[in-house]
Image (cartoon, rainbow, N blue to C red; front, side, top):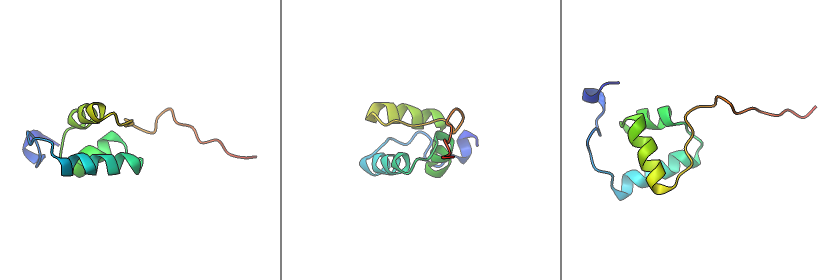
Length: 69
């Protein structure tokens, strides 16, 4: 996705966007998925999450599922 296809590129963060970011993080979405869904860059998502103190994840890499057995 380039700058021209990101509808919120350069748009200031508001309370509604912050709430959406919080919701998406709470759902366990990863940064690339959040960025696509919100029409913002991954860096914008990462930066805003850091400002808000949200624990975002870049990908599922490194996360293991432990099976009982």
